[in-house]
View 1 (cartoon, rainbow, N blue to C red):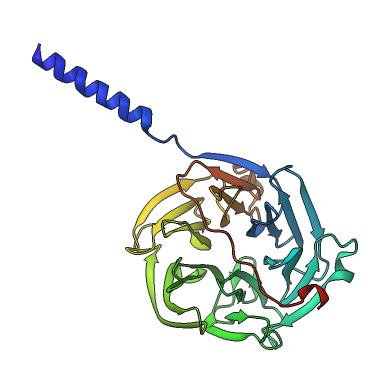
View 2: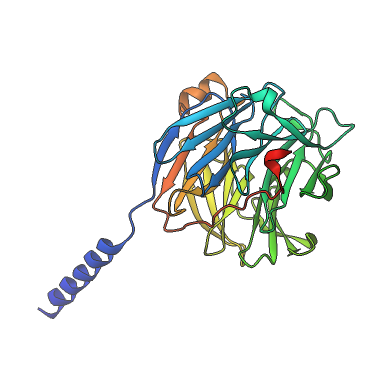
Length: 335
């Protein structure tokens, strides 16, 4: 009798635990493309997500309220980075090849409306700008990638730069050499900056001084090899608990890392292998937008991954992000 009572109590407790357990995160396909989606940037002011198609030379804008997606094609070359400009609704800073341009989103003629701000990696004509993020003082940190042929990149030919409204003629070199400059994130107190140079298969961390834009004491926080994580680290973001969310290119997943202890906390698998970047968004910043790629996939691989190249949204992770910083540039609309 006592044993039956104990079993009943155990089952009751188990049922109650399961009743309050959070359901598995929901992964939705938001937008399909035949390209290489990357560089998501959330605009809280516009309630919109900007993202790019590198090979398609396109910038997309998702209006979350209506679900409408508008697109701008830039004929100059590969497009890889887009951020919004503070106090200038629908004015974006976008990269094409190794140049950065201002672009008013509502302009009718895209190429004629591009306003050149800066050029980097002069003397390396096959390099291009890759990924970047804006810090809490409105400065853009962005990096380049060496010449890439059939997925193979020239090593140690690229650089991580810092761009602001004062140094745009000559952005400051911060880290070199780099091979494939990718994800960047900062802690909420701005004491640390996390950085990915993809071929290293590491997530590194620097001591960071926000006032002087100084980096020092680089070290490895998380090693894909040591933790048996497949693929290479690509885009990255951080949540309000200080955990990093990293896209695993050719690894088919997004991983969550404790940024203090460098421990793997979660893995969220997708039905595509080439997961390129991540960004918190939505009205309460609890939706994790995920970009993916179908570049260089064989017909057989595409048959197995029909959703490759899509934009996904992961909901129900129990985490949320911070509002994205915007690039600061006085009178940008008059530049």
